[in-house]
Length: 80
Image 1 (cartoon, rainbow, N blue to C red):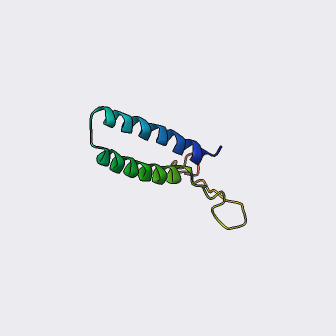
Image 2 (image 1 turned 60 degrees about the horizontal axis):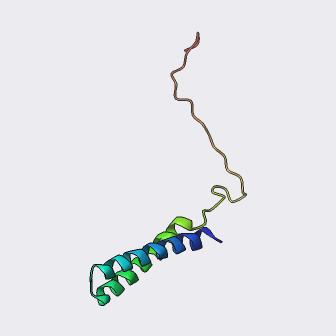
């Protein structure tokens, strides 16, 4: 199972629990439906943004990256 699917299943379980709690608090069904639709939209958006594939190669396009480290310490020694 992909991470997107598992995230979405967990979010749907959360939505069902919140909808049941709203029903037990005698909130009108129309508003429960509106809340469920909004929460499903938020769940899909957040699942997509959290589980999107990252670009594995950044740089020259050859698949290799070069990192340059700069030493920022002041020079020491006899020739400083």
